[in-house]
Image (cartoon, rainbow, N blue to C red; front, side, top):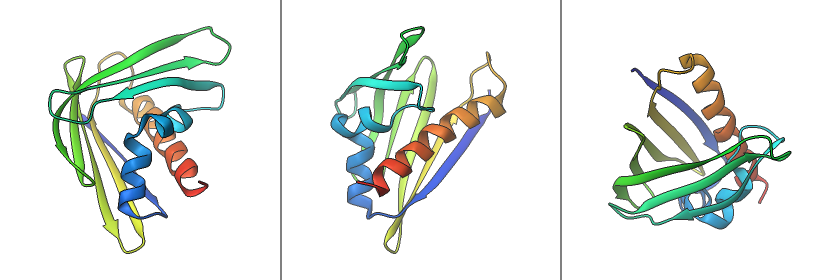
Length: 135
């Protein structure tokens, strides 16, 4: 399994970007790859050993799943790493003046082509950028 990287530069300060990325009341507003999907609920216990859980489902009810992860490292406003299903992801938040670069590096899975996985994660990150910049 290789590692896949997606990134976005968000026109907001790092504290706002961190809060919008990690607080459940915001996660439910952006955590989906397309407009026909939704994230009706999210829970996030941001500490080492804490659990992240987000429900992702098609709006028509045809498909859905819970994305669950356990935190391995949390450095507030800077980065976190969590593990899910034998894989790991690290998200970093870098200040660039009045903007913040969000970089997500994750372990690829074997079921889908890496390019397909990258497009899905990038679409969610782009949705996050759009939501954060418009609120």
